[in-house]
Image 1 (spheres, helix red, strand yellow):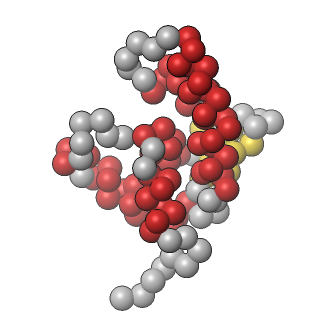
Image 2 (image 1 turned 90 degrees about the vertical axis):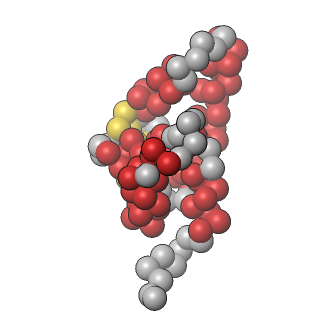
Length: 113
């Protein structure tokens, strides 16, 4: 069996997929490219009611943790100036895992993605 992925390990991919926020971002970009930053506002992802402090914390995590982490791995290309997110140069490395998870969504935990 040949290995098609050389620049990323499964550990890195699973780390990226280990957070529901990052999974949703990756699935959204897989579905439609490019995406606008505001599509990933905490209000759009959380169906439960959250207080204002939680929303602010989630926004901080989005812009200071999740988007930079995905961009550093090359899975997304994030341009804060144009507020756009698109598939990054390494997106094809994680795409098979996203596709597999999407195809088996009914077999995954209830809180998927």
